[in-house]
Amino acid sequence: MQQRLTGINIRKGLEIEVSVEDIFTPTLSNVGDIRAKQFFENPKLKSDKKFINEISEHSLLEYRDFVTKSSLGKYLNVCVYNKFDLTNSKFTKDRFHACCTTELIFYNTSTISFDDFCLNLMSAQAFTGNFANPVYHEFTGIGNFEIESAASIYPLAIAGNLSLNYFFINYKGILTSISKIISAQFEDDILEQKSYLGDKNFKTLRKELKTQQEVIANILNNI
Image 1 (cartoon, one colour):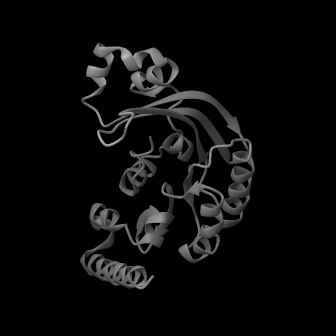
Image 2 (cartoon, one colour):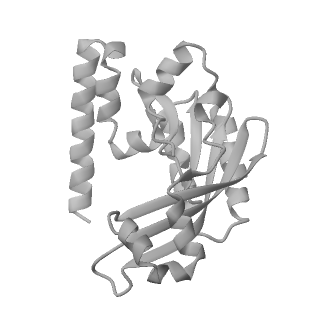
């Protein structure tokens, strides 16, 4: 649901004075293919040939039921969804399988400091304790601090089932997510934001990224 949140899109939005809250507020409605929910809630559809023929064309159907939105602090809100997944696999005894999980999207409504980042992460982790599903929940927003600070608390976020795929900071001239920086997966942001870098910085940052990727690859190969 947060795929529209890219470094370049956020940057362009801020340039025309779109608020941080408007940028990061997720969809406050139901989205997806309703058939995933229907299959989960109605076991009789397993023997409905017309319905089965329709969904046979898809390997995965997703549907999100918006449940509620809550404020967890001055700069932090959360949206709660029931997420229905319907998978289609030819390699399992029961070809079609549906499940329902709780999905939480935490979003910060202003550019926050590192102190507020830590405080809001703790608030989000406390809130996830109300739900049994051990799935990753999105923690989104934009921060005014360095990657060195973020890296120090990144393991705690992951341990608390909070994904930072869509939490952005400025890094060497580009706007990209904490997770992308740590995993060395931000080449798309370098390419899309080339005009902000200039040729020299563009080439330098790509070279640094390649080196970082090689280091990670060597570590993984030696595990």
